[in-house]
Length: 111
Image (cartoon, rainbow, N blue to C red; front, top):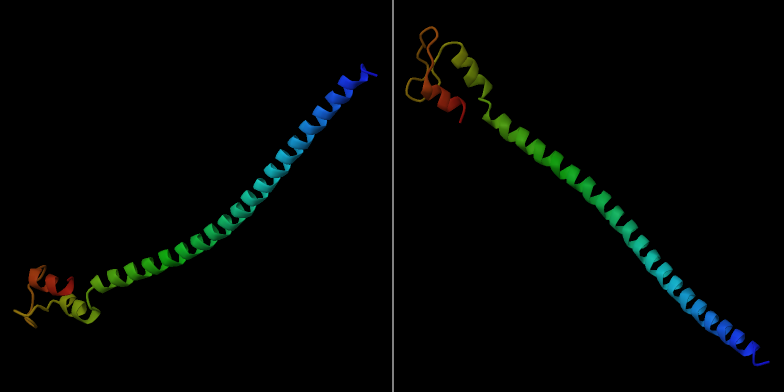
């Protein structure tokens, strides 16, 4: 009977080790589930942020286009200037010579 005691002792030790291992596996599983839930939440948040960033980028692009369109001279003054007349304050309405340009008119048109 004494010969069988070490065998049962070894089985008891093995059982305790298996219980400890199972506890560790359960802890790892629980942590993994928490990490996966956090990962899913962050992926959804990233998707929402990307959508929002896209909207903001489109809005900024539209604002840039509006600002750049404001740099385009007013069409009626540009037409007058292209027809050969000054549109600047100093010489407004006076005829330009053929091929002549006026820096004052350019300043009025493109500020």
